[in-house]
Length: 345
Image (cartoon, rainbow, N blue to C red; front, top):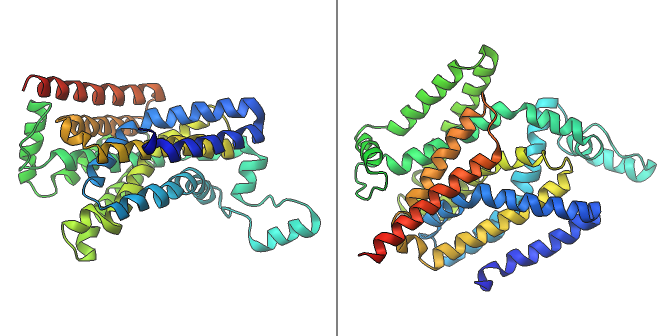
């Protein structure tokens, strides 16, 4: 077990030292809690990742763990929020070369970019990022909803956990683009329940989530290696990174309830993301998905629950504890059911 979490423990040690240097023992405590938040919200992500990674060779698994980790920590938990705020505020995400030259010559830190805002005016940065809540949840919710539907809407699927519901969804597989059609219906219904301006923002972002899923899902065919490319290679890598991004949205937004310091947020969520990836590799190499018949089903039901929470969050406030709790209950229930069936087989 230590072999799988060796890198995660090293990252944790380095991260905790960095958090202590930034904000003392209080910063260390915040980073610890953010890591727990990320792990609790992304546990189902690990199982879903494992269902894709089990088809990959060792080379691409290592790339996922190394490159994917860098993208997850710096890309999705630091750069992506900066880009969102930059678009909303109409500012550059980071200081330009000339601004940095001015800093070295005058000693005055630039103030007309988002990174500077996040450091100097963290409350303003958090407020602007939070204002994009509707777009973020609509995009992520739509993408995750399609991940959920795409797994269950399959006319060839023979194994079912929630048999009555999953059997109906499987029959819908005979209808072309059934998952996309259902997602668009859900988005239109949710948008109609919101005030006109918010509904428009929600619908546009949600449609882009659908478009992104369709493009990524079909990337394997565009590359020219149908079947294999959809499970491994760059197509699979991009799919998992966007999936991770969708999972990370609620964690990034929820992190501001604990701290406005973007460096502590990156450290805490990064530690959690590293443990999720290590756990993913463990599930793959131990063959856990094959040993527990319904574990994968439970993870995709957890994704469906998270998609529903994200979409409903545009209208209702739903605590992060409920999101993580529902996912954990579904996965544990699926694992226990699988264990009982295997024991009595």
